[in-house]
Image (cartoon, rainbow, N blue to C red):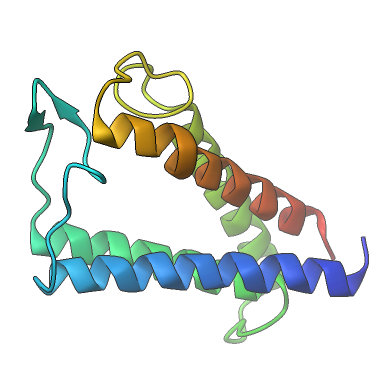
Length: 144
């Protein structure tokens, strides 16, 4: 794979992570609360109610994923060895692949509960995005 293609995939993937991280910061700061469109539900009730602290932790994790992607590309390694970023990027790929597969009930491609707003969004947006992120990270894990 050419260096230009790898850079394009990596920068795009990092941008997705930063965007998702900033969205979680926005939610954590109370600017808007996550709705039924982004939280799985059962019998009309959300399965969980994320606290601002947990939402900020998710934001931090997403921003760390962006740094791992940039480190795998050779950008912003902070003097750390490249193999750390290779391991990290493969871990991110595995995590997002597992998220795309799901829990076989409320989220992922193989969910059985499909009649909620979240489930429809998950089928058309969230799970495909997770699969795309997993693929992108796996590709970056094989480069250089």
